[in-house]
Length: 419
Image 1 (cartoon, rainbow, N blue to C red):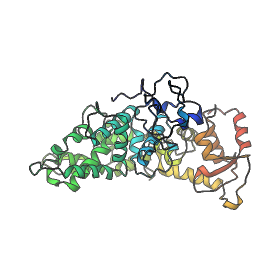
Image 2 (image 1 turned 180 degrees about the vertical axis):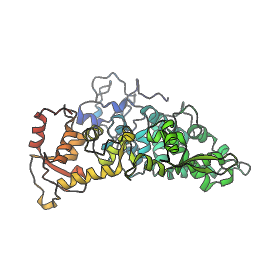
Image 3 (image 1 turned 60 degrees about the horizontal axis):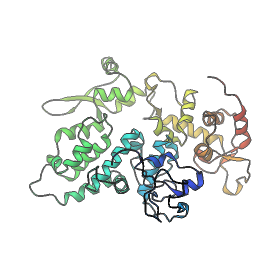
Image 4 (image 1 turned 90 degrees about the vertical axis):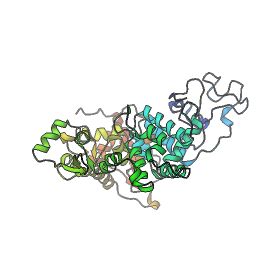
């Protein structure tokens, strides 16, 4: 039941198939239970013969019994499930910039950074936990909506579920980890899981224990390792965050670049580094926090390849050797956004040109698939350098910038200049 793909039984959104003419690979995932665009549940069986949809049938929208699937009445999905499907779709197609503004409070930054297989596995397991079922017996159609409700308004959805379980607590059950043993063993206890993959769930779980259980009954060592680590890092954590070796961190410590401090006052003292050390070591010029590539692209609202093109051509940030692979400064992204907006004067609604010769930048970045993969990054770079002059914009986002289609056509026929 936990295998990642639908092998024989199929699922799809008839509305998407009618619009595109094909079935997206998104529907091969077992956790694809709703359409992120049409807000409807996935169609998994024929409403006429009541048989599950099979891979081999006369046409994408025709069942083996001859029924037309295009005219089927579809069930509406919940907002939390739809937004979770948007995250899965963006993660699968590597398009975090298409997420836009989500309203259900999902932990998007954590979900979008999970490896694809881990994302599918953990969502399935979270849903089975909410339903109090084993993964082997729980179906995706039931577990994924349950996981979406748990992740909505994070971490309050988790807190509410744990709080409801606490109502059934017996007087002699005073151990926090024993009472929530199922959740602890599956999502908190460290094991073969990749390091720090689910730390955000671990931290939320222990935060609930400290606030709403009896603080003395929560494992003190775990609390020290999580709640305090939000502010402090050990040497390996600091090295991982800066993408350097522990030896380099030791050298910086010896040379006084960073300072070590005691952060757990127990019989066995522990020493670590204040999280502000990360900013000091990685951003010596006093710049802001560092964002991972996909998060940075979503923050700026452009595709990942376009952002990488801007960085490779020195339009985003400086080539700091400590950050060759670490990501992007938030302040640099804000500067690029401001520069793009300054290139396009604001146009009132009554003065917007109405012409088929215009191109909306956001629509081009999100929906177009040009053969030249670097054209989106080149177009943004051309706006920044003044080679392309926008007509204006009708909002505060770079997606609202208006361009001449002739400028894009000219760039498509130009031969890219080698770096």
